[in-house]
Length: 265
Image (cartoon, rainbow, N blue to C red; front, side, top):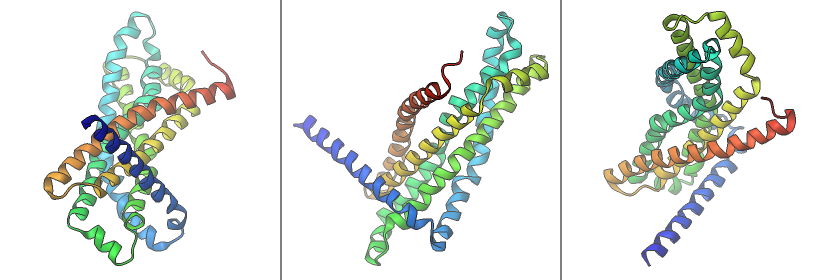
């Protein structure tokens, strides 16, 4: 009976989440046409984007340091150290950059969104909006969801750029690899499709982070403990969803690339 009850609870929670997501997305066309809704969006853009830039820059740069430091020994043994930029930058742009930016966004922004909305839920401010005839999803969730979608690819670009700079610094200044071949092979290997794939994945990750964080805040339990558990659950769920979505989006993009341009060794 316990297994059955847990299964029913999981299925019902899954259904409530997608109803919540569907209602949020249904408000997007109408929200984009009202100045009042744009005024609600601007503070969220600042909270989600501007305050996350330092974290993205520091994290991306040190990931670039680590990638370059780990790659140089193996590539130098094969006489390919001049191509180290290919490994570092392609890994950042196509794979590590979006995932890393998504995880940082889930940890810094997702927890803050869940805590803010969870506190409003516990103090019955969300119920007060309903009593006044205002839809809380349109007024509270949609601006945060749109901010995550808009700024996730921008923050990913910051992370990629910082990582590329960090890899270049290790390669050129610490490992004495010539700068010209490093840049040439990187430009030759990294295509526009790789940048597009990374940005597309970051948009998907940002959407999931916004929806999951807002849903957890709207449905948290009463009290400070309930808000804390909701923040932890939002981060863990977002982290797992990012990894799962990364696999499926990657496979879909690879199939599209191979269908349009064919396999390139």
